[in-house]
Length: 328
Ligand SMILES: Cc1cc2nc3c(=O)[nH]c(=O)nc-3n(C[C@H](O)[C@H](O)[C@H](O)COP(=O)(O)O)c2cc1C
Image 1 (cartoon, rainbow, N blue to C red):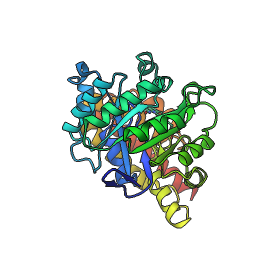
Image 2 (cartoon, helix red, strand yellow):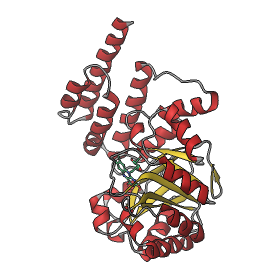
Image 3 (cartoon, rainbow, N blue to C red):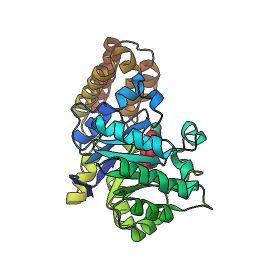
Image 4 (cartoon, rainbow, N blue to C red):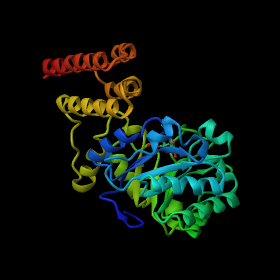
């Protein structure tokens, strides 16, 4: 899988997720086998670039290359400026968000709302590609709603504008996250497109990963929600694609090591107060499916310091470990 000058180590990409794919989580997923990890979106509104939030989103210190940064907005010139600004701050790939259905983004006619205005899509893509020397990628849904599935037209516009890869979440904007992902639409886009296509939507285990790659013929797959609290999924999928053999879930001792490492990276990146808050959702995801996880998830939200949060996490993992030992 190539994106411009970058040859990715595999076909597995962490999807951009606002509030999730910060630098610590991207790096963790890369360490665990993701070939690429796309950042949270950075707004094209330059008035917000000075905010703590944006400053953190443009921080790629120590991140394994290539760094892909997603930008969101609706105005071609503002998006071009945002692309340039991010390249100046270390972005090596610029990804344009036309896939996000979030209200805040769509009300301003950005994200997936743009898919309804094909001429504007063309102007945005051309302006951004012209503004930077790094490769530009695009992330879309299959259309605005089931009666307006125009992803193939958008793919053609993207190719003509010089976009280097197209990620497709196999749902329309109207479908939100409901229903099954339309892999058949992604198959049709791949067949029609001459640029690399990345299939996205509901890929949550190694079997599904192989099935989607085979069915769609996509050049790579993108994984979002299934990686939350399970960054080792990339390693499991890669191993399965290479050998046909299913790796077991990591033992609780390794999960402890991964989770604690993740928490320390979050505390370092955000500082104690925000770090503890951001860590809550990740801790909750890691605890999913573990015995006692429900009670633990309620209790952990009461911890407001690093010391207390780590104490509760360790106690929970001790209990899980004891449970596993008893069951063995
Ligand atoms: C919490 C969350 C935040 C997301 N934020 C973004 C975003 O900022 N930009 C974007 O293009 N897609 C965003 N998405 C969509 C994902 O990138 C992905 O397309 C979607 O979750 C489907 O993939 P999955 O089934 O593997 O999760 C977000 C999804 C989630 C769950």
